[in-house]
Length: 183
Image 1 (cartoon, rainbow, N blue to C red):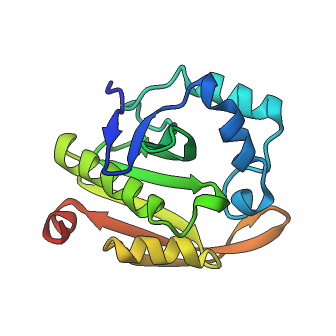
Image 2 (image 1 turned 90 degrees about the vertical axis):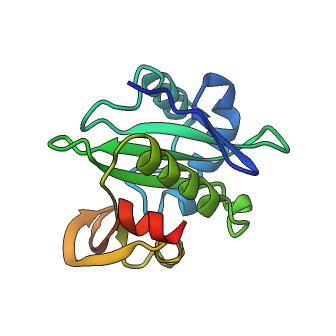
């Protein structure tokens, strides 16, 4: 098991704690944040319970999603969160996800956070491949992944019944050697 404590030029990526509750609830309760995510808008109690349950998890357990805070070094406020899951059948493959407060989007925080996570996964832990599945309508996430060198590997047409309708998804992936060439 590894505790995740990362630092980028503007951010700390660290475990979520109950002190994050107000900021976490602030953006996780917004419909635009939940729109393409596997969660719906959070109530205060759901946000609190999520942080409490997440605090029992630590990086390295195959198949388990672990959520981390993305904190601004400048303000000390929570800007968003990110998640990492190691594949259940092969811990050399990781899956990632991000949520950023709408007021903090388009400032490069998602790219900086994901770059720091990729550096950590590929350099320190022997991860071979990182994958991300994204709704085909989520153009901001698609641009982010492609800007970091992720390659679109699949297009799944109406493969998921999601929030009351059939949705389509793209699968993206990035290999360790591809990240090394880009960095």
